[in-house]
Amino acid sequence: MLESRRRNLFLYMERITKYFGPPGTGKTTTLMNIIEDYLDKGTPPEKIAFISFSVKAAEEGKNRAHLRFGLGFDEMPYFCTSHAFCKRIMGISQVMNGRHVFDFLEEYKFNLTRKYTNDKRTLKSVVQDPYFDIIERAKTNCRSLKDERLSLDKTDRKGVVIHMLEPIAEAWEQFRLSRVPPVYSFADMITKFLAEGTVPPLDVLIVDEAQDLAELNWQLVDTLAAHADKTFIAGDDDQAIYEWNGARPQRFINYRGKHVVLDQSYRIPSLVHPIAEKISRRIISREPKSYKPRKEKGTVNNVTSVELLPLQKGNWLVLASCDYMLTDASKGYNVRKYLIDNGYPFIHNNYRYVPRKMMSAITVWKKLNDEEEITLGELDDLYNYLGKTGVKRGFLTQVSQAPNKAQTVNVKEIIDNYGLRAECLGQEWKEVFERTIDVERRSFIEKALENEEDLHGEPRIAISTIHQAKGGEAENVAVYLDLSKAQKRTSMLQPDGLHRQFYVAITRTIDNLYLIQAQDDYYRYVI
Image (tube, rainbow, N blue to C red; front, top):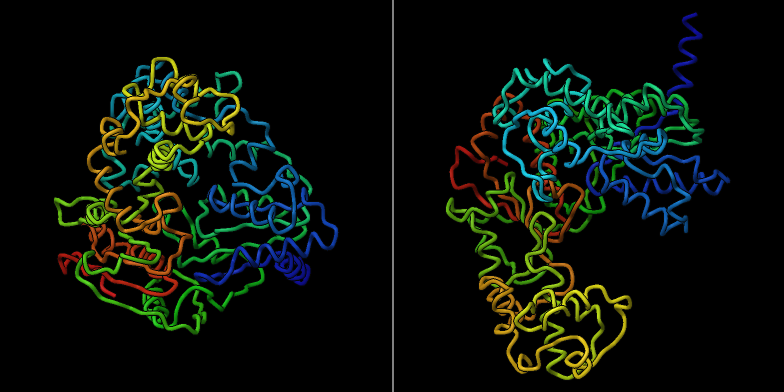
């Protein structure tokens, strides 16, 4: 009996391979190579599942497979997030959104942490209300509301009346199941599949970013792996920075199967590597692993402020543990203001400071004054910012709804047929857009153009929280070493999360690392 059990365990382990991939070691490329091997063997793509925690990682996997193997997106039904996988299998059509929550509040008369109105802006935020966030987190963590409640810190509990959690959760469950068809949250999708679903025939299961999976996601992996011929799981427990949201990196570390470490980074330069290694060794709960850096040395630089960064050229990531450290000049964090004042194009948490359409409008205006032809699509961009002062009544809608946006028109046709007020021509763009582009942005654009910056392409500077930068990289990376008071308190009890966060930040570096010293040594992450 014991020998039989050992044999079964061996066979199980042979079916599962875990890839530990430190930063820049090519986890996704390794997984794509596995997919290629199976396709070459004749495996139908619909028998390959590529599951990831995040939409970003899932889309990257699907796009890579599309470009590399020429697969159509409809040929890859299981290249998706864990939630999307369950949604497809179970035929779920109603996914929880702000409209459902608003209707629920109207019907049951509950008061949440804030007052919400029936408009697009608040309909989006109502889903993220702390009450619903806690309820969803409990489902994802496979814990009772009582146990989840005990784990909350002050930030999580802000505005929450604890004894109202259970009544709201019970009422919401009644409400969502009473809809036709029923309404499902992300966690509900997985729960329904685990209870009622049938696993499709899979030759191979691939799981990416495994360190970010919560307990409910791991239960899904367990179920799929039990039915797949082969399973490949990739991640890096040292980059598990979502434990606050339920991620269970220890599940990945302890998962049975063959153990492989990808040991060559194609990103990290040799002078940055010792710093990254120093930080990773501070993490108590981790899988010991080592990897080699690139031969290129790179640089490590200590600076006291953002003004000392050579931001005039190159691609940059400027990272901080909290968003206010990027934006709140009143507290001495002036990176955003510094970029604006100096005309350096940037993106902040995935939003461009100068939207594409705004820059297009300025460019189109210059074209018109040079008597160049433009497309109706370009004219639509222009009209978005020219507004009623430059366009006759009714023509804004006419241009926005034009069936052929590729049609070209000249200045005379635009005046005669599309409502442009001729008296506006000849004015500087700053004057024309005075009412629709604010003073700060007009000044910024003017300086950026003087600097010969490209405002049409992707901004060469990104400022971001460390969490939102995960998966990114840049030639130059600047990291604020400041901690918030809350982070300082938390780090004393749970230091691993903080170490992982700064490990992720440091390892975004391709060439040059800049460490921005903290304002207060007490609230400084010490490298």
